[in-house]
Length: 74
Image (cartoon, rainbow, N blue to C red; front, side, top):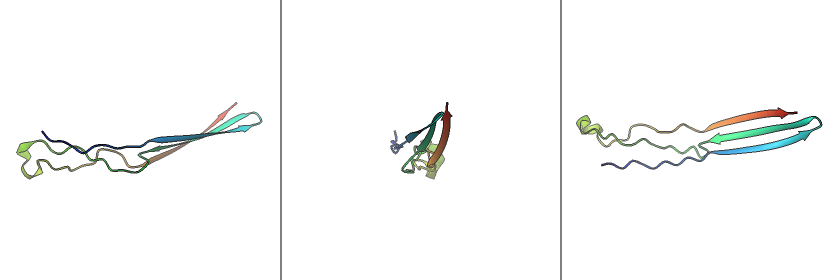
């Protein structure tokens, strides 16, 4: 049995509403993987892979993603 590395991921969303005469404008920002932390996949568990056994060779998560949204409500 092998234990893989832990995963840490911080997602955050910030929203602001601006009131105008006829309604409101909402601006929203979403950040996924805020700290841009690399999370690795579990190690190779196939014994017949030889030297690759127990090696962590790839990343499990996406890089930081930022998303903006603008919404007009009337």
